[in-house]
Length: 417
Image (cartoon, rainbow, N blue to C red):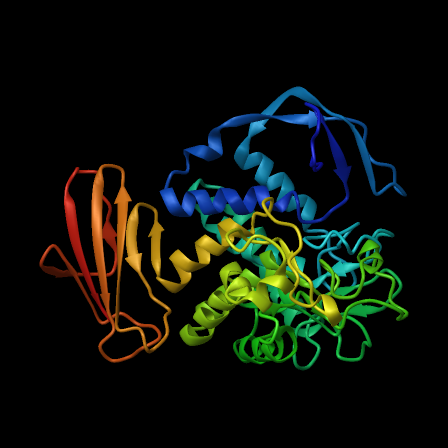
């Protein structure tokens, strides 16, 4: 398996030993199937790319990669990605390689021993979603194998991955730990906490404890940001990779990486904290960084587009970084529509599960499915954050799970919380 990214010319890119890239194929496939209910995508055959394999001491190589004549199904590609990723270290967690989602952790595990706690949660989530797919298509032995791996992984995450008040981030080749309260730098990292909740792998008490720790250490309301980690790397003994080359508070090194900030909001919503989720959603909205002249002079980038990162410390705190290129905008849209307003489509069925501020009394959504229009009115007379008491579809009370139909009609849905 290889990752080909940053292509400037057709067929050229970088092959790496990042540990998460290959798993996003399986994650996206499960997302597609969950939304559409269409499993036929698994049968589509697609080619490999082929090129020279990286040497044992080589972390990456930019090269030209040709399309192989060999094809296998998307299902088989996903299984190969998962199989390559169930490569665990001495703590029972997946090895991080030359980086995971945070590719700045380039020397955490490039010698082959380092492990990623976040990657453990991500892999757990994928196994949890892929097991039903395996069962459905008759791959019962694969499903059984993954159930056992999932159980062992959950145990390791909640023991070796736990630091007392939050989840650790990674174990390094040299034995040092990232994301531990014993550290002078990188005591706590955001994505290990948010994905402990998103994945469903964290023990119930640890979900709430770790999220509270995240709020206390990483949410900076004064500057309107949610930091990726804190304190940033600077002069300490830890040598995690090129992340340390950034100034403290810049990009991955202790600034807001908006992608990860949105995962925090998803975690808040999944635990039912509608007031917090909406407050943080509003806080990181770029328009809030330019509402006043003084704020806009500090922010210094476009207030109408999501910034990939915002600086997090000293006199740079609150200054916007890269804009116009980030995938965070789609995640921001997703958390607003699905997790706050609560409009969820699963396998062709519509369900509304709001997680909103108690002060919201009513709001409306208009959703188009093929040639049909669904006018949805959500009423919150009792001032709740979550919970649906009644669903009325075209004048009749129904379950909160409405079959979507492209019948070219206009449908009325009333949700009573």
